[in-house]
Image (cartoon, rainbow, N blue to C red; front, side, top):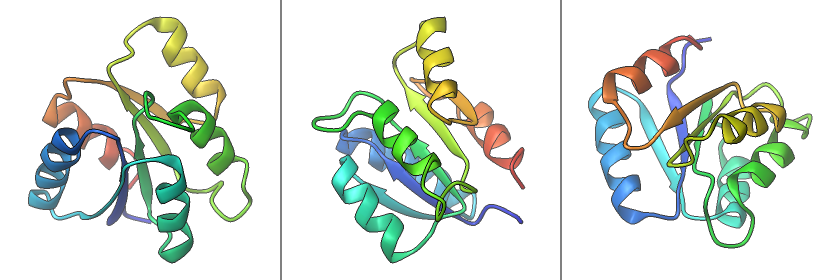
Length: 121
């Protein structure tokens, strides 16, 4: 199933704006959430085709949120791509162990991100 709807989870308004613009220009429908609680509300309202997940956020971090989403039978089929400034190999391994299907390091390379998203089409 082609990816059309993307949920973008990031506590940075700058990142949300940058990534929303990038993805919208590429034809995706983007919804945003600034924290774990808001992300779970957005998921319940309208199931996305893919989630782009920041790691460092107040409250529930992206690793915890990814684990919660990927272990929920309602959302287990929604791929999560970690999108974070945490660039250590251990962070990537941990993110994948939580259920993420891919990992992108900020600052985001637009072409790389789009290629990773299209890999799920």
